[in-house]
Figure 1 (cartoon, one colour):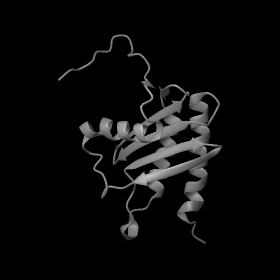
Figure 2 (cartoon, rainbow, N blue to C red):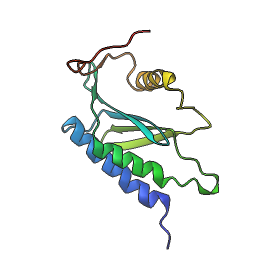
Figure 3 (cartoon, rainbow, N blue to C red):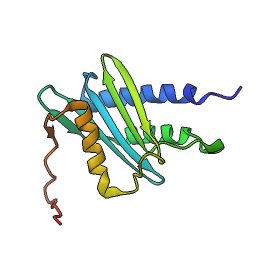
Length: 144
């Protein structure tokens, strides 16, 4: 008997949650994962609600591998499309996942990515400030 995609995706999304808890160092409540993905690239963004502020945390290779596995589990056969944006939130001990698809949003427009992510953060956390890690030594910022 062929496995239903939810038989595959359910455990994968659980593994993603376990990895997110490991990334934030414990307490799962308030974790938010925002991912944009396309053929050959992925941009996962991990955030943690710390009450007065939201902290950005670096993702890891394991998380990216799990996200790729979930994305490829969506077969494009029969007109089914793979998602372009995944939003994954842990609240009250449960996770909730939502998707946006290529016919809803074009994630190939890179300059709009920060705007989409910012909109997703504001929708979840309002105007709480987001704390990003400091720039690595030797890095430089490009300005228009």
